[in-house]
Length: 206
Image (cartoon, rainbow, N blue to C red; front, top):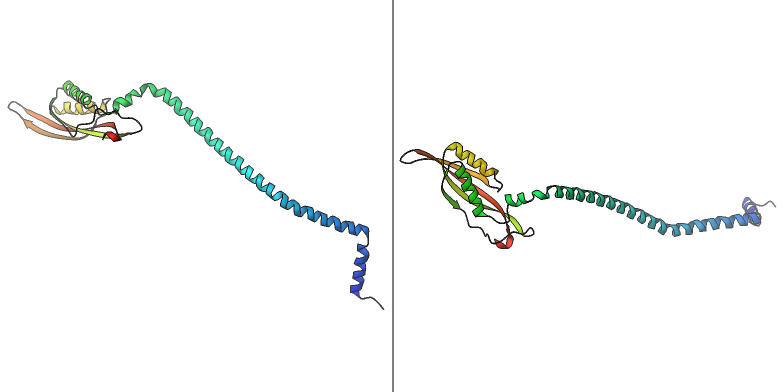
């Protein structure tokens, strides 16, 4: 009786697996699959660690470049500081660490006298605290305002204002009011000039 096709296939496979070469080949395939399976699970943490290390190296390289730029900037700033350090006293003269009202009014009087102007009066908004010397960590910029009432020639008054604003002690002229007065002998031009005097004051000294 002839065998069915399924029986023929089963017999062929049985004969094949009885062959030692076939058994070795099958064991080799299973071994390779096992190696690949365990290799994937063993290598994955290593690959993750390598990826993290690469990222960390890149981050440190970027940080190193930023630090190098900051060091270069600091070197430039230090060289500029050394270049101009001998002139820093001019900053203290321009905006001192206290109002120095008396010294400032002396400058006003001197410039007025040199231009043949008569100071008819000076009014001050408030008296500053001259006992406190500002420190850099607590100081804020303040303005002391005073008005100078002058009489004299227009061109001389203009020159007075120009010289006032060019003085080493910073004085900010923000308002000028002219008026024409007269006395018994001659007409006089008068000007009321408002001057802001910047200085530094400690917060706790206000």
